Length: 74
Image (cartoon, rainbow, N blue to C red; front, top):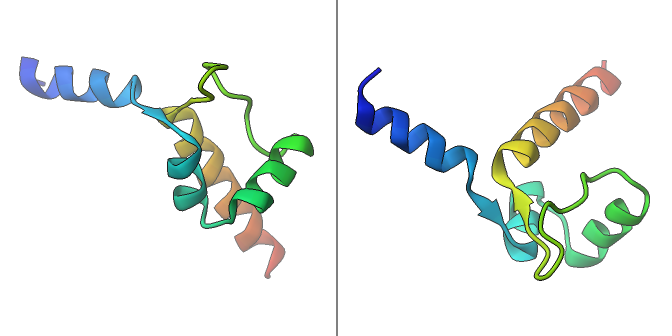
């Protein structure tokens, strides 16, 4: 792995998502998102004000959610 690709992967790990990014990535409305947060279905933000989530954590959450949904449809 070269230095440039190593820096890019480190930058992606530290990428933050705001609420608008979250609803877009999860494919839900803001209301649905806040209901999911209240129910504990979405990880808590890593930064409180303004609320921001780590992109890598959300990617893992989304992948688990897709697997769960796929398993439920069988």
